[in-house]
Image (cartoon, rainbow, N blue to C red; front, side, top):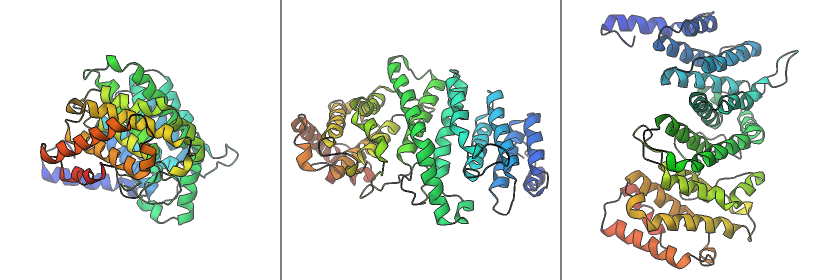
Length: 388
């Protein structure tokens, strides 16, 4: 289907593959294709067919069989380190979908809620210390968070209260652990930042997917609205959205080192061709941090977060010629400044010691962007909001 140039042969192959999902022995057949592993195309077709099969709302698959299939896929990823990227992602998608579907399922005479051990299972990949298993682990956790809060066709057939129950349960049981793990990995990257170059392709992939995992956690549907968000989109709109973090997350953001971490990564990470948005993601995480609901912090705590954000932005503004030369980076930085103005009050800005220099450099950036350079039309939407 993927290699032939003969049109009739390709059509026949597509029809054969499309009928796999209608077979009564679909799971056994697809597992056999994966075990044979003689072609990345057959592996991909098998994994993607299994995902479609178990996602079909008219299909009834016993919980024990789904659990066996999830464990089979996890073991397959662990024992096949050289899988093609499309196969790896298809298997990750299968595991995430099985976990989501089976979150509230129990096995008779077995463990209660067996699908909820996914974090511990994936953590074994990351604790191996080897680059490929670590990469698989962070990809899986990032995809899992996105899978939970993004609505699928099968979710639309479920009652709204069930979707909300899933979102809240995952938030309370697993999400914070995933976020903390992501922060730990980013701190490890920060400690080794000076040694990272564009030649470290695998390591940069790990950093990219770890940042994406942390961003997915910050972009989560914390209050269980059940809304669907597109890939790379924001739960909070730029005009009025707020990140509704639970109260137990507060100490993380009162530590200035955790906020400074994203500014250091933004300034220090190399721009790799294989990870086009690598330097954008730290800024995207900072936009979400800036959007955290005001009520999470007391009046005494709020200036601590604002000071960390202003000092980080100030350093970027001082080095804007080198740090803001890429359009996508420039745009995301404008979003960050705009969100700061929305989330904090002018009276809070003026209390920070670096306010005078900060507001002068923000005004310079606004003037420079309007009269000297040619910023994106979408970035210009944020410019009137920058001068306080």
